[in-house]
Length: 351
Image 1 (cartoon, rainbow, N blue to C red):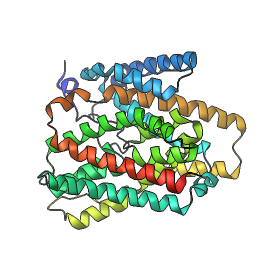
Image 2: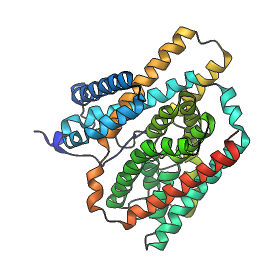
Image 3: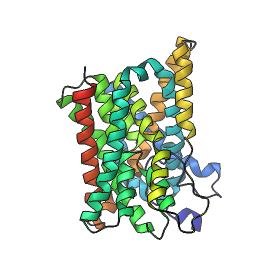
Image 4: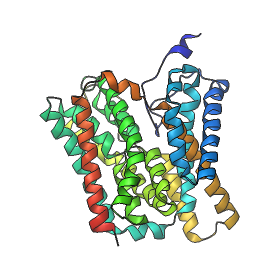
């Protein structure tokens, strides 16, 4: 077996920005095994969803987690990475054909202010709890920022900005593992919490979109609640993703770069631009019903594949030897994000 095939990347889930790229010598055949496994698993999830009336994304997640042992096979890594990264991005863009600017406006300025506060306070919680347990403010910024914005992608962007002098590879890997596990758990638990709080579609979508770490899990959890909740969760979650650029600018002010070149404020990612572009076109009302229906089917299929691959790639076993204290920083930030999101959804958004 080649050295390329046996090398393992850092554990990651929903790598939206392509921060964790596959090796440059990867060819198209390398993607086939992982994509085949993902496709068959997603088809099984679709069968169970249709046969038992369960949400497709929930079935996809459960089957993916059941196949988590396959993550140890390096032959599947390129295809699984493509499914959880590229297919997810395309699916997010197509979600734009299912929402309109009218839905975004319906959230109102109160929702936007709430999102800003949730992101800021979650990031601050990461820093404060990290210092409480004897870790550096940089580690707290990394953990809190990953929870507050968009999981693994935010962690990679922030770690690159902080530099290896402040954040080592072991710390980064630990945050990626913790974020992956907490995000997968949140995808299953948060819709249940929304039901227990008797939230409507809009408020449930806000809670899920404002609290879950990674985009794949946020969309999966939203659509498992209802279609309209999924659309709302997409809007709220992508608003958080768009905050990555200003957050990186703030982090750069507090942690000046020491000899790190070529790191700047991230531009708005293309999938966010594509999402809002298609939403704008859909708001005009020029999308034929047949195209919208096809896009809805395609979105469901792509997200099912992405969520399935996400479940397979979730590095649950790696948490066993990581120790408790670093994970407590991630857990604390996660609970703050959940509490603030639930408060905003019940007090400000619910109507």
